[in-house]
Image 1 (cartoon, helix red, strand yellow):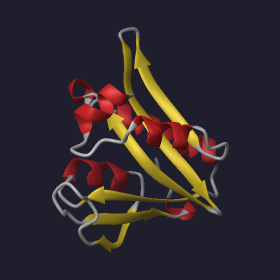
Image 2 (image 1 turned 60 degrees about the vertical axis):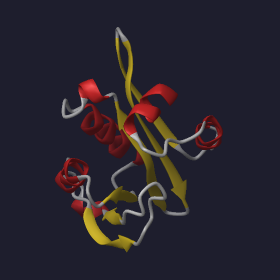
Image 3 (image 1 turned 180 degrees about the vertical axis):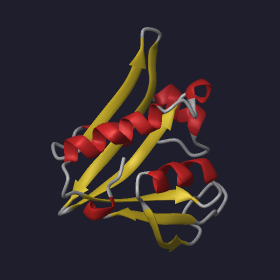
Image 4 (image 1 turned 120 degrees about the horizontal axis):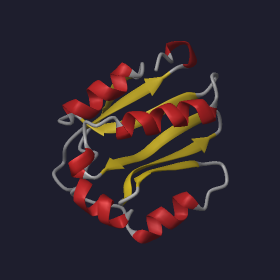
Length: 134
């Protein structure tokens, strides 16, 4: 996971951050693998009645190959039909935004200068139960 994380993000999560999130009993953590090894993962935490999609990463060679979409489909199935979700995504990450919109996520505002590496804004997105269409 750490190798994929480092290849995917300018400011990757630390081992301690992964340990913290993976140890939460209310979270959902999913992995996608092939016979060659891990190709992607998803980390989602539950806060009260909302699921917060914390991290989705796919090895660069497998991006746009539906790995992230498959992980999201599994998350939606596991969390249930009445679940609500939120996430933050870089405003420049058009591919991820389009994928999330395809699942019914809708923009709900921005977090100014959210990303510490370059001060980029984050787009806040929400998925409400009635919008689930994956």
